[in-house]
Length: 522
Image (cartoon, rainbow, N blue to C red; front, side):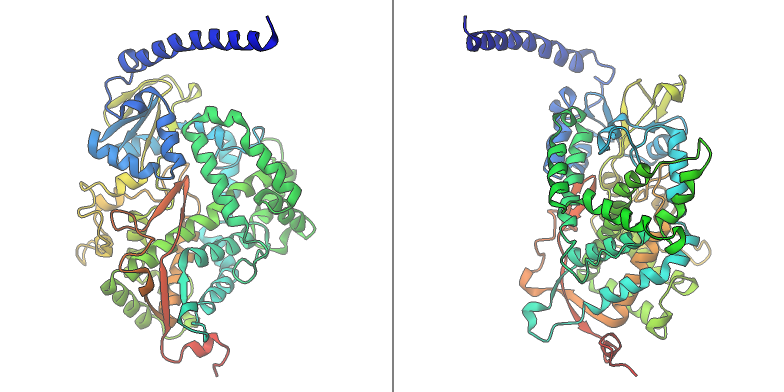
C-alpha cells in the first residue's frame, strides 16, 4: 500500500468516526442539554457556526433582534449561549459582581500572553488596568485635554466649508470625516501623537485595517475554535514587513512617545508610565502599554465616530429636530468661542436628548457582550430574570435589541429626542423606563470608561457644526441613500464595534460666520 492509499484510508476511518460523534453531540445538544428547553434557531442549538455566520456577514445584531421577534425575550443563540431582552436581565448580568467576562474574550487577544482592559477575564487584573486606562477619560481629565480636542474639532469644522470648485466636490461623507476626527483625537489622547488623518493621506490605511481586524476578532468571539487557524498571524507579519499596519503604526507611536518626557502630553502614556515602576500588584510592563493601545485607539476613536455619524444621519432626515437643535445652540451661545465643555454646553438639554436618541437607535457596539459565571465567581446559583443559568453558559443582552424593545421604547424605529426630555418640569428627569433600558455604554465594573469623553466630543462637534452651518442630505443619493438599513435607520455593520458609510450631506455656511473659519474674520 502506497503513501497516498494510506492517507486516503486514514481519512475514511476519521470520517467514519466523526459522523457518529457529530450525531451523538447534536442529539445531546437538542434533546438532553441543560438549555434544550430554550427556543432559538435550529442551527444555533447545534453549533456556534450560527453566530459566526452572521458575524461574518456583519449583521449579527439584526439577526438577534429578528430572533427575539420570532422566539421571544430569551433565545438560545448557540449550544451554550442565551440572549435576553429585558431590563431585569441587564442588571442581573452586567451589574453582578459574581459574573465575569465570557471566556470568548480570550479570542479577542492579539498576543495570547497579554490582555488589555477590554479582553481580560481576570477580575483583579482588570481592576488594575481599568484604574490606569479609566483615569485618562474621566471628566476631570477631559477638562485638561479639551484644548487639544478642540483644535482637532476646529480642523473638522473648517474642512466642511464648501469647495469653490463645484457642487460635486461639496458632498461630504460624514463617516469618513468623523472617523478621521475620532482617530486624530484618540492618537493625541493615547500617545500624544499626530496621526493627521483629517489633513494627510499617510496614515489613512489604519481605518480599513482596523475594521478588518475587529471584524475577524468578532467572528472568533462567536466561534473561538476558528482562532486556532492562525490566519491573522500571517496578516500581522505582512503588515509589519510593509510598515503599514495598525500594529506597526502603534509601535511607532509608542516609540515616539518613549523618546519624550513622561509629562510631555496629557495622554494615556502619562497616566500609565508611573505603573512601570510600581510595586508588584500594581506594576505593568511596557508590553502591556502596547497591548492597551490596541484597544484604546478603536475604543476612543471609532466608537465616538459612529455616534457622530448616526447623529448627523438622523438630524439630516428629521428637519424639525435639526431646526430645534440649531435654535438651541444658536440661542445658548453668543460666539463660537463660548462653545466648550461646561455649564452652557450641559444646559443644552435637547442636544443631549438628540445624542442619546442616536445612541439608542444606532449603538456603536450593537451586539451582545457575553458574560459567564466562572468557577472563581462562586458556587451560588446565577439567576437572570428568573432563569437559573447552568454552569458554562454564556449570557448577554443585545444592545440593539433592547433599545428597540417596544416595552421600553414605544415606536422604536422613529427618531424622537423628546423621549429623553423630562415629562414635566417638576421631575427634571426623562422616563425612568427609558434610562433603565439604555445600555449604550453598558454598566457595572465593565461599563465603558469613556462616557465623559464621548459626550464631550459629540457635543462639541454637533454644537460647532450647527453654529457655523446648515446641512441636508445630498440629493444625488436619493431620499434614503445607501447609508440606510431596511428599517430606515443608519446602517451599521457589526464588527464588535461597528463600521458604517455616510450619511452623505451638503453644508451651507450660516451668514458670514464662515469668514472666521477661512481666516478672514476681524
